Amino acid sequence: MINSNEIIQTIEMINQQHLDIRTITMGISLRDCGHPDVKVCCDRIYDKITKYAGNLVKTGENIERELGIPIVNKRISVTPIAIACENCDTEDYTVFARTLDKAAKEVGVNFIGGFSALVDKGFTKGDMRLIKSIPEALRTTDCVCSSVSVGSTRAGINMDAVKLMGEIIKKAADTSQGMSCAKLVVFCNAVEDNPFMAGAFHGVSEPECVINVGVSGPGVVYNALKAVRGQPLNVVSETIKKTAFRITRMGEIVAQEASKRLHVPFGIVDLSLAPTPAVGDSVADILEEMGLESVGAPGTTAALALLNDAVKKGGVMASSYVGGLSGAFIPVSEDQGMIRAAKSGKLTIEKLEAMTCVCSVGLDMIAVPGDTSAATISAIIADEAAIGMINSKTTAVRIIPVPGKGVGQEVDFGGLLGTAPIMPVNPSSPEKFIARGGRIPAPLNSLKN
View 1 (spheres, rainbow, N blue to C red):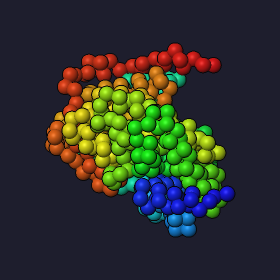
View 2 (view 1 turned 120 degrees about the vertical axis):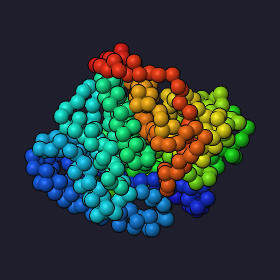
View 3 (view 1 turned 90 degrees about the horizontal axis):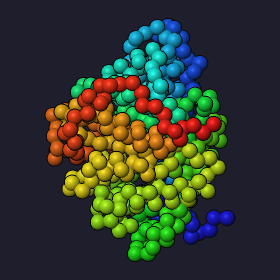
View 4 (view 1 turned 135 degrees about the horizontal axis):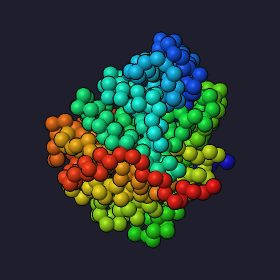
């Protein structure tokens, strides 16, 4: 039974501590939409998305109004287009991206994810067509997000794909002043039920249609830790666990309600702490509240490990199904504390890479100088993929080389994407390493059968 004190606490979390449902994401299978004729395939995709998601935004808004819980985004994820459209007779997959964009605008969602390819071991013809279409697809659409999986613990790392993605990111940046790269992420150990963009896609083991919900509450955790300032770290952990339970329980309620009203199965709650540019809604602030002078200082990785673990332990008890990425996100441009530390030089790309060993998901929304080479970008992707492969966790890179910009300058992406300082990159060249190509074999810990 919910008592009046719990109701008051929830209202306070929403009104003063930035608690929200970050996204309701509807996953839709497009596996039955393929056809050799491009127009037929596009029509099937458009018709299916608009049929299933026609009431998604309205339902989300009704739940938001009736329960008084902010739902920031309503989104769609679809079967990776490289799979769904592979038998279509065209080399240029931008037509499918534009169809996704048209459908997303018709139903009113913020983003649609799934302009994606899974190339952990190698490329099919559909994978290669899609990847080569990414720069133009993202430049000419507004709502479409793209992802490419280049490795996994089971498969190793496809270094040919890593090399190619460095080149694709550079081309996407050059044709859009970097903006397209904010909608493009490269994964290792990609998950099939992620509701967060830009990496969401509807995996092949998912049902015909499903509702996944992503919750967020860095501001709530930050305020809870103020009450235990100076106390031992086990007390900090317990406080985060209890707070994560309350945050996730709210997500569970919204997910179940959306599932019931849309007559679509409930998939998972992703209990990630996803920051926003708003003051007081920062993962970096949580780490500094634990006692760090600045995020990036020695001890940052340990503090982040504690936070991530406690969030998972507390949240998993509050939902019947927890999935997605579920942890603490550290996107630089979307977190005021991260921006502050990066500007002052206290947070470097190398320290961020160390932090990704213990958090979700990886190097996220990192702006670098526009003259950063494709080989260097590929090497950064390879480093992050290696962390994911060896540690059996999801890692990702969303890096943005900004044309004409250098270290010390800033780039404004707008909205939830925020503002990013241009961070310095190690000048040593990895070009000969990346040029080798091939595959990095799967690690020994992949042999679990």
